[in-house]
Image (cartoon, rainbow, N blue to C red; front, side, top):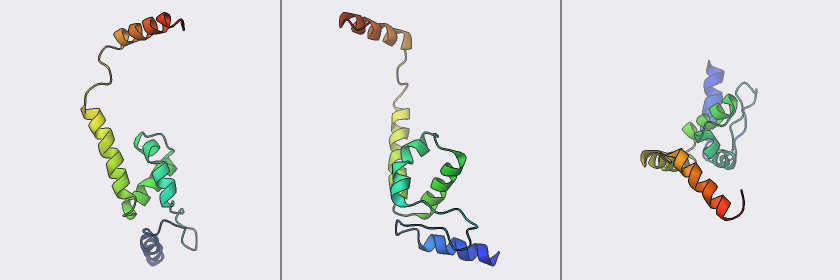
Length: 108
């Protein structure tokens, strides 16, 4: 138990520098670096990552004060879009309009 706590503290202490590595002993997976996490945030929020990658990013976000505000911003953005209403309430009408526009342009 003491070893686990020592490894966890080592990860937490390194959380703010953007360069994370697995503690010696390799019992815990390596912490992702900040750039990697930020590049994958949209995929994370869309649920498009593997379970392992999702867990690694979640852990990073819980520990990293630099990345968490970016995560909050992107999540708030998605929440605002979702709250604005359905993407299109009449998909059949939209499809007909698109097909008509394509036909007018000679693209159908």
